[in-house]
Length: 193
Image (cartoon, rainbow, N blue to C red; front, side, top):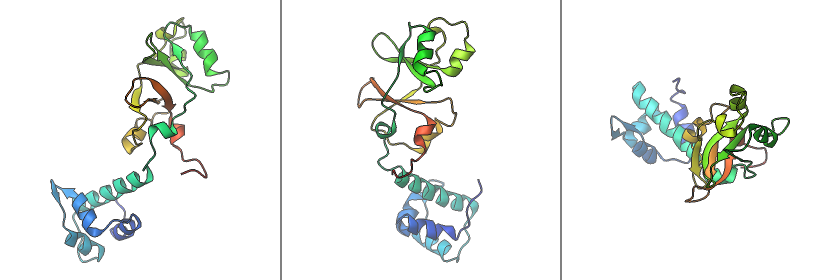
């Protein structure tokens, strides 16, 4: 990992509204917090920390920045709620029709008899199984399902690094699916926070 210059620590910290004391409490090296005095010395160019300490400082600043950026951005707020689904016993042709002629939808949750998600059918899974008649013969495993109140973090975003991936969103404290998130949904829209 290529680290920014040490001079950036003070600019980033102040930009995030974090005190030296707060930063020092959050930066841990070998299980111990660093001191505020060390942070102050680094910022005043009176001390050059070892790589491990510098890396830990920038990791904490990065995490704080991500938490502030994603504050209040929950799965329920960003998911697509017009969920198009298909049942496992329906025909693949039915799934293709629901996806739309021009590929409006590339992922369809597959529902079981009780309305629970049992898998996912995608345009890719259909292409990989050209002889499949029923959806269950062409579906993939069940994708990750998260609660509507879950805040979107880097870890959740990483689940969507593959463009063929998606995350399903369930209603609060329920297994009922209310929406879907694909990587495209995480791109900030102009004029929206």
